[in-house]
Image (cartoon, rainbow, N blue to C red):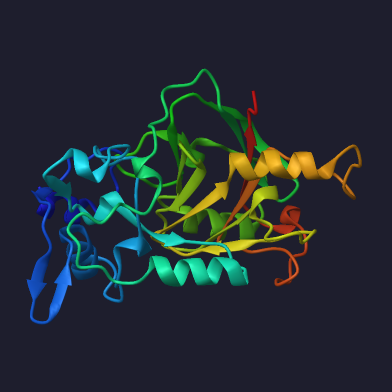
Amino acid sequence: MLARSLEARGAEDRTDCVSFPRIELRLGKQRYWPQVLTCKLFRWPDLRHLSQLKRLCICGRCGRSPADSITVCCDPYHFSRLCEPEPTEHDTARQLRRNEPSNSQNQDWPDSSALPSVTRDEHWCSVAYWEYRTRVGRLYTVCEPSVSIFCDLPRGTGFCLAHLHADGRHEMVRRTRGKIGGGILLSKEGDGVWAYNRSEHPVFASSPTLVRGHARGLTVHKVLPGYSLKVFDYQRAQALQRAMGPELPDGPFDPHSVRISFAKGWGPSYSRQFITSCPCWLEILLNNC
């Protein structure tokens, strides 16, 4: 099962878990949890701590507490690296405490997989695909807790951008579409909406809840291949709405949307100032009801 997973390289939406006893393994002077060891061997040689990983929603053990089972899943393609927004000083201190190595075999799982699982909803978001300023295709409505958005995912199901046709595509659009590949896995989880980059090129994300502290303006985060980012936080969105009061922010603003660009970044740190200058991008419209 592990060999089949490594051969597929994450190209399937659903694969069986690779189970191993829930014990730490000693290699020389180092001790590893099984899932950390397989991810380190087969995906990320620089991986150090369990807290650097996030279990993906495609894992059969997602949503279960670690204490509920005597085994763990160690399929390296059931995990991603954890990408976090630029930390504040308070966040940095908390993260340093969280990353301290532990020898305890009862270490709690650090991400959202231990939170209550999200059941099938009637409609939690719609996805629009854009090429520069032109929307291509219809809105894609998402009812399942997760959806794959891709151009080339051999055994994937979901929103296939390769099926969308447009007349007179710009050469840059064609080149960028060629980089989308496995695209992203978008999931609604207990603590918010997560995006996992399963392509071989970076993606860039922005949403109202990704702005750190009390800063205003645009914040764009780069998500490397194999990494996950919580692109929308429901609790933070509620707090932002309360803090906003009756005054509207400057310019057009949708407090329940996420924008993701493939391969090309935008904003203050890039030559493209607006996402409409990006060749291929997504607009995720969240149903706040």
